[in-house]
Structures are given as structure tokens and as C-alpha cells.
Length: 61
Image (cartoon, rainbow, N blue to C red):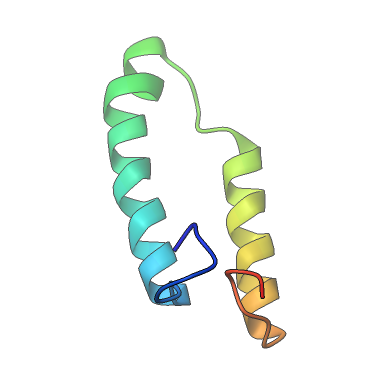
């Protein structure tokens, strides 16, 4: 989904991918170091949701 050709990722696939990577970041990076996940990650997800809600393709055309 990172390339312009081929199938595009839908919102559910992106949410699943961020949930999965978030699990591993939390388990192996944030918790061992006593850190909270960065606000930028949540902000990026919010921006993706808004972009999707506006009916725009997630992978640019």
C-alpha cells in the first residue's frame, strides 16, 4: 500500500496495522523505558481517520 500501484489499503487495514505495531512498540520500547506512546502517533491516526472520512484515497493518486 506504500506504492502507487497495486491494491490500496483501506481504513480497517491501516487501523489493524497501527494496532499491531503499537502493541510491539509498547511492549518492547515504551514500557521497558517507562515512556508513554508519543502524542504524534495518535495525532497521525486522527489525521488518517479525517482524511478517510472526507472520502479521499489513503494512497495518493
